[in-house]
Length: 249
Ligand SMILES: C[S@@+](CC[C@H](N)C(=O)[O-])C[C@H]1O[C@@H](n2cnc3c(N)ncnc32)[C@H](O)[C@@H]1O
Figure 1 (cartoon, rainbow, N blue to C red):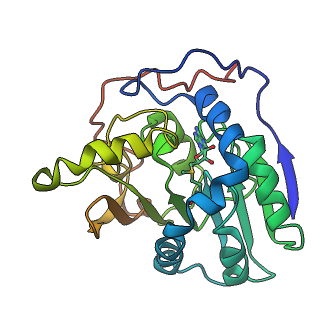
Figure 2 (cartoon, rainbow, N blue to C red):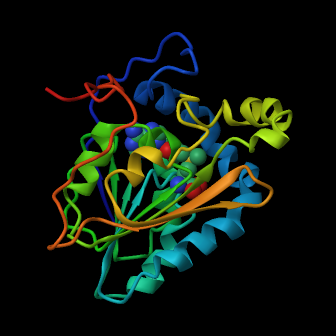
């Protein structure tokens, strides 16, 4: 495993954000500094669904796979096994606290490279054949992050995104509990009804399905191939300051 710490030093921390505002990179780094030690234990109930997402991504020997917002690295060992010695796994994560756990987890995995950076500005060392977004809500709400990542992927690259979403309207009372629970893990409630919507606008062959009990989703799709159009999102949001100015000089 190799490690490339490329995060900017602009993180400041500060007042708690209004949860319907744009994604907040500094806020996420602050939150996950606190969460890192307990994250794996507190999220063990999503281990199986994360494994299902990896299976749907179908990483192959020799491929380069990017795990965006890899956190403590739960998905990295399985991805590493799948791409085998001739492949490469790139984990991208801005929180040094979370990254420390990923580093420990992948210490003996030579084909894993970890980059401590927000997705908005990361430079991937190889063009990915496949990208995984596992519970990466803040990234999915950032047009800057998605354009940065997808423009570095191979044409036709496979994409799987797994995450939390609001319950459907007929289970609406459960959303009070849901929103309270999510507050520690995401910095914006924006887009929670259809968190995949911005990403889907960049992809072809998009399929989205809800997962039981109704507050999770999984998206599969592809970066447009050689015959498809260049990146051309159908952006559901106005031009947004999504924190992407962070660390961009
Ligand atoms: C809920 S955790 C998911 C971690 C891991 N993918 C998993 O499945 O357990 C969300 C992660 O997104 C990361 N994150 C937040 N903002 C980000 C950004 N702008 N770029 C990349 N990662 C980000 C957080 O630091 C955190 O590790």
